[in-house]
Length: 265
Image (cartoon, rainbow, N blue to C red; front, side, top):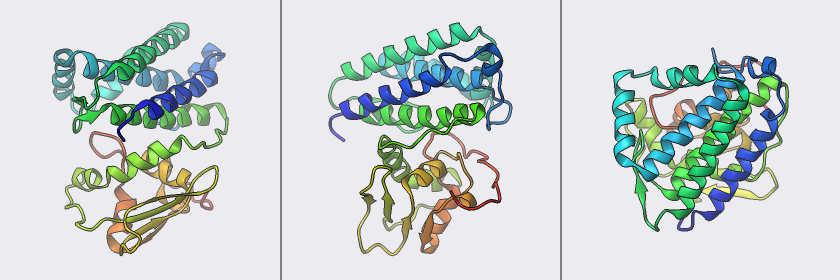
């Protein structure tokens, strides 16, 4: 993706949609539990604000970002939860103001980044478009957690194309995160989009294939739903294995969600 503008625009829209979910909440609603164990609505928004700040440092101040990485290495497995816990106790108005300011600063920095720039991250370095895509993925996923806590259903939009693309591109990373060799051959991925049409990746004659709704694929790669509850089909042993371990986010494998035991969504 050479021009990052479309994904930055979509990141802004996704953030504004989540903002509308929380802008009028009472203090009691900010304290509601979300599907992420131990995380309230406040934890979710704090995490988005914290990750936006980390992204801004990666784009604008590599030295400061390197110090953040060193800090994370001193508390492996806990630094994300610790950061969320530190901010979740702030007054909701402060949380919301911090998130808004941080994401606006990041948006401006991404739009101003020179062509071809690459930025450090907790995983592999990222381009401007990849950084914006990762932020959109997290905003969508954590926004789902907030919506679940509030009993709100968020209709999927074609902004999910960015999450799909990231999920496909991180296939080999997911295998490596589980200590497994990445498949040599490409997979064919065919996913009906929310608005119609078909999003496709990989050669048409690939032996291993993944098909199913784009929404379900996004729920899988962000670990917001268990595979057993999704209408995704894998053809081929490597594709089948991928659907068990897929993750579109940096860091160690997550625990995922327990199956609901009901029909696939």
